[in-house]
Image (cartoon, rainbow, N blue to C red):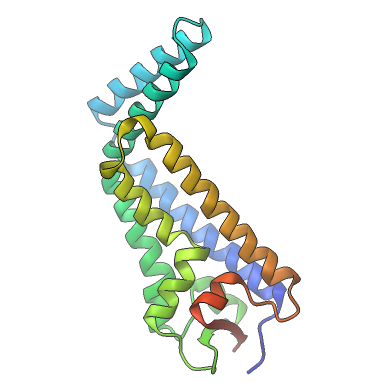
Length: 196
């Protein structure tokens, strides 16, 4: 079982991210803007104008910004759910049924396996991708839309996004700079990426 090179892993990841962003971008462009969202965006614009003219306090501005952001995200909850399903299918189901390969990995002739070299389980693939590809962030952020008070929503979502970014960068750093090229996502999911 030959470990995949860092170069192949990076290119496979970039290919997969390109596919993901194209799909999610096309999906976002096909989404209609509701009248309620238009009204919320107008309210946001007016609020920003007041902030620039210093007609509102900073505290009031951020509380109101948080509430409007939450309302706008509620308008996009269905799209968020579709994004979650796509990420789950692309990074968990497809590799489960295609012997550990996404399209990027297939092009680069590498695949995900468990630590013994067997096909990775769906559970391992899920754990791997909650960290590396933001599945946990997508799940929690969708829940926050409905469970977190509007006044702190933007703060909580921003912190979650920052944590997700740090986790991805940490995984990439580990893959690039550890001798065994094993990232946090692989340590926790007991998976490896090997050459085909």
